[in-house]
Image (cartoon, helix red, strand yellow):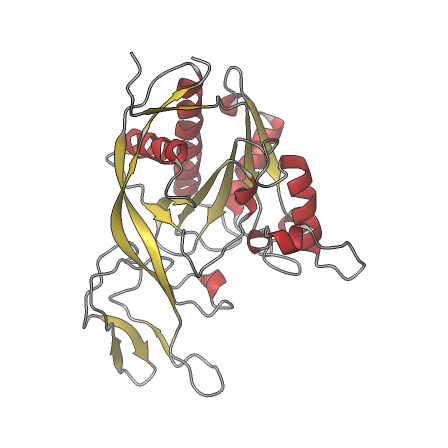
Length: 314
């Protein structure tokens, strides 16, 4: 008997796995190219799973992007921008991807996109959630976290009224970001690759079980919600004057309290965190975010509850 707390969701028919959104994050590139040649491990009965290299020019050059960040241009203005000779490569590419896997916010869009990323920060195997009200995605993350236990699998919620990401995966009905590190840019590590591969396996297993008719009861997960991006201290010329303090380095997802060190100047002066509540930094000293003027992201711990779900065809 189906509970009144259970939402009937459409079965999942089409899934994409994106690698190479940033061309120097090699775990996703490596896995997607492997699955394009031999995709047996990602196939599930009744499900179309398509591995796809999103930014092939950046992958070829092993650079984050060619003209601009592909993972920030899936907004209405860029997706509707007129094609001209001087249009940035990534904007043109975003329109091509939206045509194949979208259109964004339409019934024709792919059901799920797993977008595979690496970070130089010590974030472990992190799942990125875009919508705190998406029962299906929260249920999937709950399943993946339990499948990976006791290994930690943080969930990072990037929903924020003043921070708009317009990610590559956002064209799907259920976007899933997968961020695994630490791994240097342009490098492959076996342990990081294994973490990413397991996350995809468990995510696809969840979809398969859901499609077969299993009812998932209401669940609650602990997540880290983005609050604010923190820049490095800078001089009047905009140059960095302090680095991440050793006590904060590699401490992603660990509590940071008022008065604890966050930066260290070249002269040995410690700069402490000033805040009213405990926060949980992440993307600490991420190499790709120097250009974005971001030393780390402040998050807070909250709990999200998802309604029970069941396939509408079961």
